[in-house]
Image 1 (cartoon, rainbow, N blue to C red):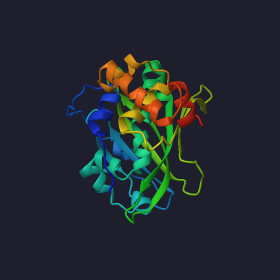
Image 2: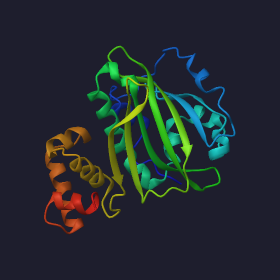
Image 3: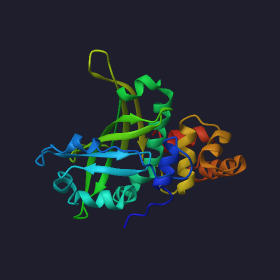
Length: 254
C-alpha cells in the first residue's frame, strides 16, 4: 500500500497559494463538468475537472475506468488523497516539488497570462489491477479568484506507457501564443533522489538545487534555519562529497 507521507490536500492547498487550512468553498461551478461529458470512452486517456478552492474533483470522465480500472465516482467521493495514494511512491516523493515549481511559475506570470499557461508532467500511477502505468498529466486553469488564485483546473491524462523516462519526471510549461499555438516557456527535470536520504533531506536537497538558501528553505518547510543547516550536513555526509553543490551534482544532476 502506498504511504502518503506528509503530502496531503492541505499541503497542496497551501502550495497553491491558499491559507494554511483548507476552507470549503460554496462557489457554484455547475457548468464546468459539461466540459468532459462528451469525451470518448475508447480514447487512451481520461479527463477531470478539479476545484482548488475546496480541493475537490467536480467531474471525471468514464474513460478513467478503461485506463486505470477505477470507477469515476471513487475520485469524487474519496477526493485528492485517493489520487495521491495510487501514485508510485518514488514519484510521490517528487510531486510536492513539481507542484512547488508549477505554482511558483504561475504566480510569477502576470494575471492576464495565467489562463494561457498549460502545465504537463509525467508520473506512474497504480491501476486497480496493481500494475503501474505511465501517465502524462496536462492541465490548465480556467477559473480564478479575484486576486488571481487558481480555482478550476481542467486536466487531461494520457496513457504513455512504453516511453522511457529513466525515472525522471519532466515538468513542462507552455504558453499560448498570439497565433494560437502553445510554445514551450519552461522545462525542469526531477530525477529520482537517493533513497538513503530521509524524506526531509530529499526536500532540502531538491530546494537547494533550485537555488534557495537555508533561510528560504526553512521558511518554505516551516522549520528553523539551524535545522536546515543540520539537514545539509547530513546530506553531504550521506552522499560522501565535500559540499552541498557536489551533493546536488551527484544526486540530482548526474
